[in-house]
Image (cartoon, rainbow, N blue to C red; front, side, top):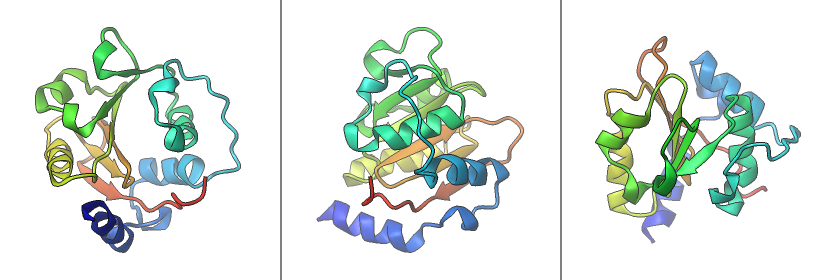
Length: 161
């Protein structure tokens, strides 16, 4: 029931690409999130950790952002481009340790429970996060030293694969 209410709320408050005022987020939405025609071969190492319903969308996003390797929390040693975590696993020290101009964090299940939503809201307030993108089922945290802090709630046709 909680997720259903969050889904309705998200639909009502979210914007399409035309509601964004950031060239970075507009381009991401236009060229990756809403562009279902753009076929992306699965060239991201570690993409098997992405849940199947979102694999195509996240692959398009990572291709647009020129990210080549995604890892989970259990094996995030090294210099992977993308860290994929469930909301329950995310902490502020992890954000501070991992997030740079070259790396992003994708957080799964950000609206599944009140606790997950609280984790997401705290993550968006972290000092290293300059761009947060809420896509209902998952969120993206980005550090861009050239951009002012902005939070986006984007609507996409998640009912269409």
